[in-house]
Figure 1 (spheres, rainbow, N blue to C red):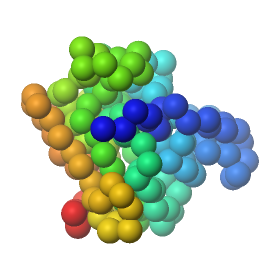
Figure 2: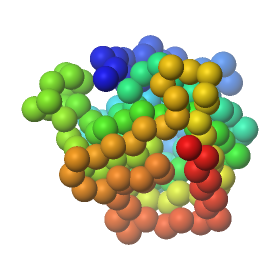
Figure 3: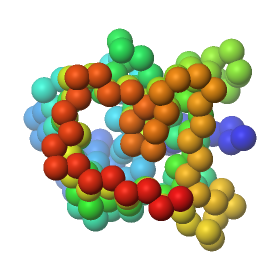
Length: 174
C-alpha cells in the first residue's frame, strides 16, 4: 500500500512547452505524470470538469506511475470528467489504483471504492486516440494494479456515462 499519490506532486502550469500543463484557452496539453495528476485533482475536487475543453497527452509520451498511487480522473457523477481527452500513441506503465481518497487522506473510511481506472467516471465526454497499458518488470511495483471492492473498474475507465469513444484503441499488456 502506497502512502503518497500523484495528486501530491508539484505541477507547473503555463503557456510554454516546458510546463507540465500547457494551456491555450480551453485546450490543455499534458506533458508529464504530474500534469495528468493535476487534471485528476481538478475533476475530483470539482474545480474544473473540463466541459467544452480538449486535453491532449503529449504525442508518444510514456507515463510511469510506478512510484505513487493513481487517483482516477473522476469519482462520481457530480465529479466526472466531461471534456474531450485525446491520447496520441501513449503508454501507461505501472498504474496502481484502488479508488479515490476524499480530502487526500489515506484512511479506509475516506476511500471511494467505486469507479476505478485511469478515469474513474466520465459523463458527456469524448475519449479518442491510442493508449497502451503495460507491465514494467524492472520496478518493485510490477505491472498495473487496478482493484475495486465495489463496482465499475477497468484499466481505462471505470464508468462511462453518455461517453463517446472515437477512433479509440486500448491495449493491455499486463
